[in-house]
Length: 137
Image (cartoon, rainbow, N blue to C red; front, top):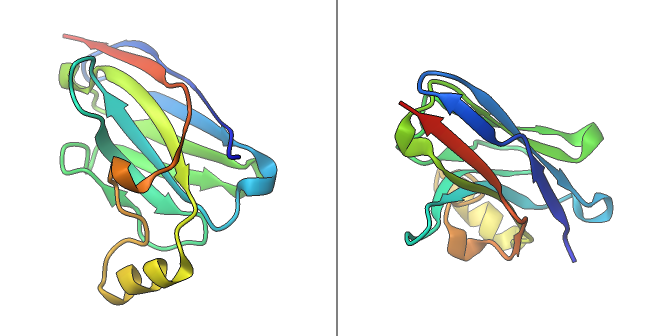
C-alpha cells in the first residue's frame, strides 16, 4: 500500500506562486510513477505533471507548461510541484498520485521518445487526499 500526503495548498492572487509537497511512504518510493493531478468539483480529474522516480523526462499538461515544475527529493521521498504565474483557472483540489508500472511499459515509452510516465489519471492507482489551491483575480 502506497501512502501519499500532500501539503502546501492555500490562497494566492493571480500571478503569485505556491509550492506543493507530497511525501511518499518510504518503502514504496522506488520504481514509481509519481504525478500531480487537479480537480474542480463537477469536472473530471485533470493531469498536471508526471515523472518516474528512476529518472527521465517529466510530462506536463499543456495548460501548465512553462509555469509549473515537478521535482523529486529522493532523500526525503518527496514530490514537489512549484507553481508560478498562477491563474484563476488553476483553482482546484490538487492530488498527488503514484503507480507501479511494469518495466516493459517504461521501456516502450522511452523507446518511443515519450516521458516514462503518462500524465493520465487512469494510469495511477494510489492517491492522496488532496490540497486546495485557490487563485483569486
